[in-house]
Length: 349
Image (cartoon, rainbow, N blue to C red):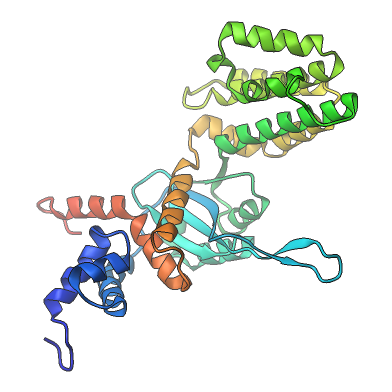
């Protein structure tokens, strides 16, 4: 029992370890051990902070992605009367995208300066070991990587590319309906009735269902043909990205890319042209994704864990407590790997 303490050291240790490994939040651990929330939280801090203070593990592929903390707050503009966002908090997660390092950092904001500043604070030997950085199509993160890690290869996430293509197809469908019909889509319109099938992968569609969708859009005239052009561009992108992980030859990549550009050039929709321009702008990063098969999937998984931790305690008021809980939840795999290495005879952790 420490001087002037009312809780034994053994109980504090048990409470901190229980919150870290067994309970979903601090209050659950405090209720189980019969102590107050501040005592339980200090025990949790004492348990996790020494492990979190350890040096970063070696990383070869870095993943960067943002996640929103909480919900945006809206307020009414006194001059215009319109509702606008007055507070929107974002965090940037930096993760080990190809190893067991887990979440390496949780940074306030999502600007290039914040990300570049954190990377610049790390040791030169650690930064030199990074060969690739996976990001979504974010100009801010691209600038941060270019400034702080000029030797690393930027890899565009394939999931976000397909989502961008689906968004392009949806925009073409909406504006084609408005231009030709002079109104929004209705249930009897073939383009609206088949909107979900248009977003599905071609190989997942039943041949009969696809033939019915295709013929209905052809019969719809100009709007249907315009939508089918955009659909073909989207599928050409998927056909190109399907080469990932197959060690493709450069000639095959070039042929499928040319097919995508050729189909986009025949379209009259400005959305398709903008999409093709985006692909051209990000092509070095897209090509790196096809060749290396790296993705930002692990960053998306840690974003889910970060939001799950926020829901467990119904939101953190203290951002440092929030960051500590998220960091601890997203490094389980790294801690298990470190514990396994420490048990191997003749190896020093």
